[in-house]
Length: 361
Image (cartoon, rainbow, N blue to C red):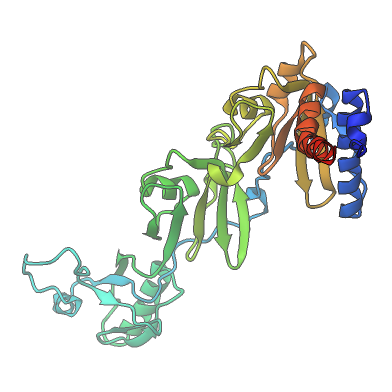
């Protein structure tokens, strides 16, 4: 008679499950070539430490931004309205025909700054305009015209701002480019001009790209009156609003509905929020004492936290523990659940052994 499998000869099924689970864990650790990270208990002290160091929220880099850009400087493509008082003959140089038949796409009458940054004006010749403020160009024109006219009175204003742009993209209603004019434009001004945030926008993770670098801004309601909301945009800036889906948390194990939980609009997602989005713990299979949070920390390596939800204050702790993007929440099963899984793997082998024994007889 053929020998039965060793697992079937063990009288204590619970030991079989635990031994198989421990062997699997040890084998995974050996395959990974590194010991398992220590498990930290989620308690009041841990939550206070996390809050003291900023928790899992995205860091606001608005304080690290360079100084605010100066006043508007004329650029190539801008249309200028230049008036020399008491000299109406120069009005014709503006290109104004007096006709009301103009198209919306037509530039307003005026002097267009050439792509090389220069400007041609009657009796003043060609002079540099790019990089100057309207007041500086006004003074330069007055000096040139003083050789022709006595004490010329010159006025310069930008009739159409076409040289400078900022780009807004991501989770906003009307992505696109916005012209930069002589009125300083803040981050919230720009988002308001493109229709505001969409429903899936993560207000705590807004990226400002400038001169090859990126800064993360937090525009959530709790910080909207802070420095990040007052950051002024400059020519060439690119503003990108991230999606809440990009900051999702994986919830798996003994829950009613494994899911990728997404944070609230302010970017905050607690452990209790994630479990609620997964339909809560499975009442028949979940071990409430073994709720794990696995976090990949680029600086310190993986970190593992455990919550014992059998404690009366567990839900208060879960509601205060903030998850980070791409965290993994795993709810372990009870001892009987692990036994069932091990037996489901072993029973086919046992049945095959019995069949072979019967046939052999």
